[in-house]
Length: 337
Ligand code: ADP
Image 1: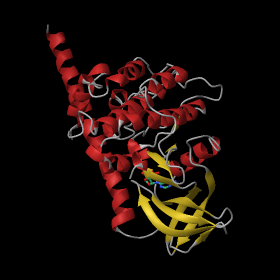
Image 2: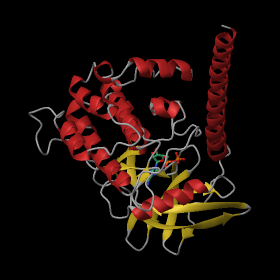
Image 3: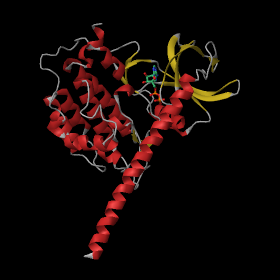
Image 4: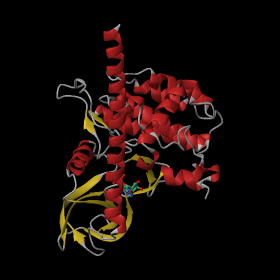
């Protein structure tokens, strides 16, 4: 009896400890994001000045955005006589992110739905040093696009065609052996010239999940928290090593948010409550406003770390969600405005 009690209290202690760890991780992640954003934006220091020419070819025109870590500029490609984008990060930040992104963009060069990489280098502006990637310019991200639409929702006539393109880009990424690990609507962008094309961006958190022989690497135990709390799978919350199935869960949550206008846990701040709500909203329960998407949800939820997703089946399931009277050249929601 005593030993049972002991075990129970040990278990309780462990749970408490895990909770504390989660909180710590959450705070760390938030702080990192804030620090990066504050550094890049509030400080107002452009890492590269307007008018600078990189690689004797790309002339910086203006800063057009910033993520948690990077600054994004629009530039003029003087060779192709076209616009392009430059993503710059301070050299004293974790440069692994940028190296990873370059590796992935090079590996996927020429793939549909992945911005083309045009160059890379280092730049020094006074005593600020940075690394940069030059790539194809894309348009607005789907998070911003959604918020600009009526009811802050993407219509089902546009949503599933859009998400099918995201899924195709994701399948190419997985096929090349990489996980994205931060799938979310702000990482899906419409094309700058053809706004019916969708691009998957931001490969700073990717991980190679296949070894050189094309086999799934052994899962590691107790990995750090990766990704964005709102869109991460329950496995990610539990600090399991992630597989393609977890990217698909983030894809699922992103689709529900874009179509419904929110997720059941959008207003929650505590990770504990978010986990509970994710547990309570699987399959049909997650798809109450998009019942056509329930089959996709159920298939994705049936996968585990070792599953090789059947993308052809997934493409077909997503395609089936399109309204039957959808026309081939029907404009996307954002083309009406
Ligand atoms: P971070 O890694 O810091 O999160 P991202 O790569 O996600 O940075 O970029 C942040 C934002 O900048 C994106 O949501 C998008 O709106 C914009 N952006 C990123 N890459 C491009 C690009 N190639 N062309 C145009 N805008 C871009």
